[in-house]
Length: 216
Image (cartoon, rainbow, N blue to C red):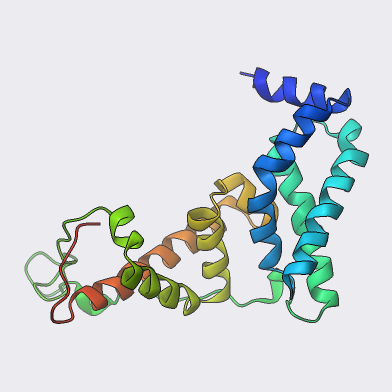
């Protein structure tokens, strides 16, 4: 079923509705700025990329065919401009050249072996801890936020980027795929592996003496 509201927005923008355009710029630019900053070397460069993106949107709006959501299309333009500038600044490398992280998502030693009862199930020592608070409440705590940031920085580049775009910047899967030029399947694998590594790092932290366990 067509998205009537989205179609209406496109038509308003095409007709030169300044109020609608200003609202979209205000709503989307903060996230666009954070995404651009992940590709370029300075905040000023990221701001210029966002400005260039909106100019490109205005120039290309008549050619927008609606094959993807308008926001997805805008973020694709943003990513292309940011990647080009980032490579020029010699800070980033093309996404395709970054090696994918292989290996199991969870340490195989945490599962029972094929010669044990309940093969493939958690071992007593390997089972995840039962945490009692919501992830939102945990992340709000300064100490936990620092742990999350440290664990995020330790992720392989692809996983860190996908997790950041999905869980921090709020992009949906289509937008992440368009922004990074990856397939939906690859996006799902990277997101799953990244989240699993973050969870593992937080489990280790919560197991330390004096740290209250919470549920996630």
